[in-house]
Length: 81
Image (cartoon, rainbow, N blue to C red; front, side, top):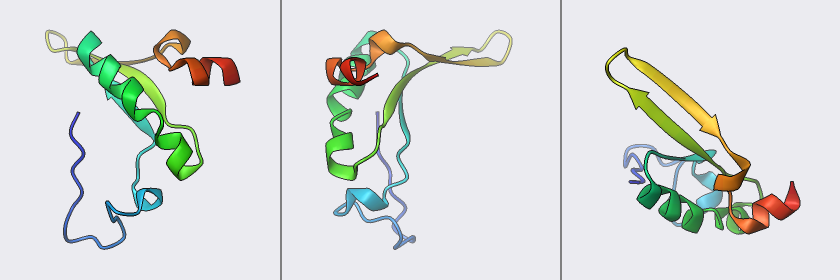
């Protein structure tokens, strides 16, 4: 997972996480799921929920599927919802 902030747009400042337009963390494999769970504490910094969603790409038919699974969220998220 790579976070890229455009340098030409002063509205988004990496030093001020509340200005970053992050609303969801996507993952495609188990390694990325572990990483996304590590980022989920972002909520404590910005004050709103940032969920984890699986991104499933089927290149053979050009289909993208987004899957929300409660079990993918960290324990703190599962206890709250």
